[in-house]
Amino acid sequence: MAVQPEDVRLLANDRFRRLLESRAVGQIGQNALLYTLLILIVNETGSSIYSTLLVTAFILPSILLGLPAGGLADVLPRRPLLVLGYVLRAALVVGMIVSTDDVWTILLLVLAFSTVGHLTGPAESAALPLLVRRDQLAAGNSLFVLSVMVGQVVGAVVLAPFILKIFGARVSLGVAAAMFLWAAFIVSLVTGLRARAADEGPKRDEGGLMDALTAGWAVLRSSRPAFLALVYLTVVGTLGKALAVLAPHYTKDVLKIDTENAVFVVAPAAIGALAALLLAPPLARWLGALRVAAAGFVLFVLGIVGLGLVVLVRDFLLENVDLGLAFVEREVGVSSVVTMAMMLAIPVGFAATVVGVAAKAVLNQEAPEGKQGRVFATQSALSDALSLLPLFAIGGVAELVGVREVLLVAAVLAFVAGVYLTFSRRFGPPPQAQPAEAG
Image 1 (cartoon, rainbow, N blue to C red):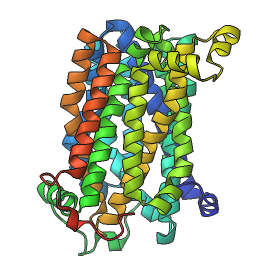
Image 2: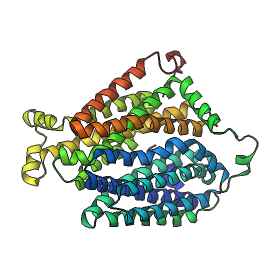
Image 3: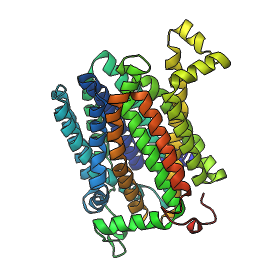
């Protein structure tokens, strides 16, 4: 999924470029919003439980609406749906600005915000085949992934931390609302989003919600590689959400810096993620996508363990390896623990993105043509649903025993679960169902 010359040539397509621009601007707004709300809620409550509720409000609509939203994308006019979705999200963010002192109102507005996003999101993916040739779909999807990364880096690493620190939460939320309005304007200029006649012909699958769920789950249960891809995506996704919940507390309790400086962990992770976008596709071609996803899963868990043991890792390196930690602390004034956490965040971001790219490539390979959307919708809904209980447990236990201990226990349990499900004959399709080439 790295950017290739074909991807660059695709940018000459005005309609596709505008859709890509609206997606990138919307992602910047969404990531700036999430970062601001995480810091705001931690500062208001000092509790990881409320951070867990915030993340839950973001993912809950995916569980309930992920599958039927795909049907809406096929029935409703796509351009008005996308424009209305961005405008409604901007209005909801304005409501958050007015309610910055009321955490429960913010959580309800976030739930509404995420509901709108999950109802309109599939329309964006459904619009891609209408704007590019079939042989350009891979390049278009590659640029879509890149737009998400740009949104994460600009929104959560650059824009929100700077504005939040200088101007405060209300201004940061205002900028996020402006981003959604900007995205609405850009996507309003995109033409040609009406479904082609072929899309509405008799070949289209008219199944309802249960049919969609059954079709997607049937693929995941009949293919060992697809089942393992679901396992890695779910485990890494759950740990990633837990890390997002605990990041402000981690910066305050472990790194001993202000919660607004959580960017010290987020920024290096984004660097690792960008590197993974370039390296994951060739690695998947050379080694097989499933093997790369499994390796990324192991690396991610080790990175989380490293963050949990960051002080011990720092002490070991100071005694045995000269990485310049003492020099940075002495000359630059940045704590060696903070520097060590930044270094560990790079492989964490790299591994999470590797798993996302490689595991989804496995699903692409295993899902029959015509069922890919339902397979991905089922995977997303299942991953979000299965992550809810662990997230609440992590948020609650962190209040009692501390962030480092929770990270370590969560990483160990995730590793045990991943390894067990990888080799177990009790869950998932039997190994003989695996095709000769999983990659």
